[in-house]
Image 1 (cartoon, rainbow, N blue to C red):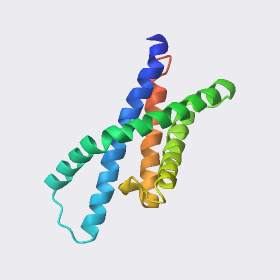
Image 2 (spheres, rainbow, N blue to C red):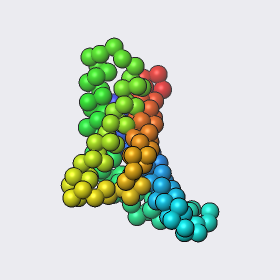
Image 3 (cartoon, rainbow, N blue to C red):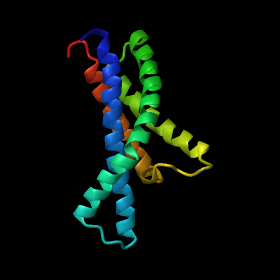
Image 4 (cartoon, rainbow, N blue to C red):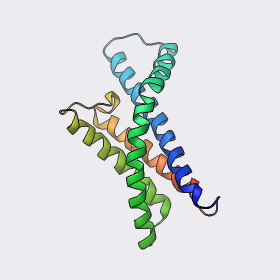
Length: 146
């Protein structure tokens, strides 16, 4: 597969992150609504999740793709010059990328967290966990053994 595994891995890891991130953030929002007394059925959860994937997903994907490009390039430098496991490096790069991206979005939009499901620490951590999993996926996709 040669060099093509790197851009392909970046795109696929970004898609993974955008999908997982949107799904998780939608569930956080719906849980908050349910906690406020709203009746939300499983069908409502599914339809709202699909709507968010179609509405928020493409824009989130663009931000994630840009962030992961920077984070995974930095990770590649770490892997090249330090004796650390590449999977761990890309997992940390993905998680840190998501934390930084959410923080920067909040700063750009006058203190308002744009990703509604990441308005709490638990929501931010969940996005970072998705980022870490996407980093692991990237490491696997770009592995020379794979």
